[in-house]
Image (cartoon, rainbow, N blue to C red):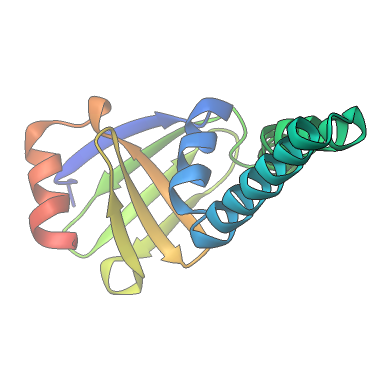
Length: 154
């Protein structure tokens, strides 16, 4: 049977980082804002007390969050050898997606096993569960495939 649509994705760190930041959800946003509030509070103490002892922790706390987040995302990306920097071909059939990875076997994903589809300005994320999904880059998709995902799979 011939496929209906086809697209390719190269799983790069940049794409994984976009995927992760979109789907990381509320806990990271809360952590970020808590650190901003604590950092602001310590900075105000430094200003009003005239003591640098409060300023140093404020700088460390506020500047450490992006470093911590990026290290966590890089560690996750580097630990997934099956996707890391590989080209993946998605072929869309009437009832399933065939996933062809370079250097490994093919997988099939039935449409009724899709948890949800998350759409951004540049990508679709076909979620298999709350924390696991496929990256589909819109730029690599035909207009028919974008319409198919939007109309049939969402």
